Length: 197
Ligand SMILES: [Fe+2]
Image (cartoon, rainbow, N blue to C red; front, side, top):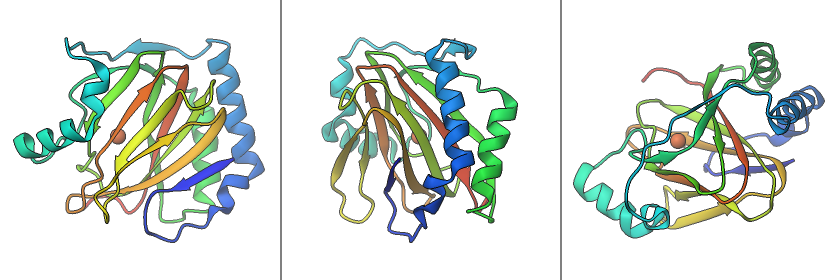
């Protein structure tokens, strides 16, 4: 399991080898691959070219105009419903490693080829957020973000199967990120405490 820590915080990666956790993820991806997860379309449509919405140039424009974009302004994505018992199992597995608390899923997204989510920060929450992502083709989908310390734009391409990315969100240090996919890509988010302010 590939684990990418996109924060500067020390995070013990041993949870990414937890057998219960890995088994539950496999059950979820099996259901998804068999098209058994209920879904609904969250897409919004814009005339612009998708790739131009995911550039550093566009990020700088958004910062100038809006200062912050808490939720994305444009997306082409389906939201899926992961069965509650499986969500609970994921949360229980993670709680063993993150005793400060693990929230309910923050978003379960299915990106199809042509899918995307534009730059945003999720800065209405604080703490760590983890995305568990399953892609069916290598290097055809990515998570792009601005490194909080260097200000550099980084593009983290997906491998086949499951991978984990953790980042921190907060009001003061905004974590700008966006997503693109030219393959089938499932992405499940959880928030890891502290909660509130
Ligand atoms: Fe996000």
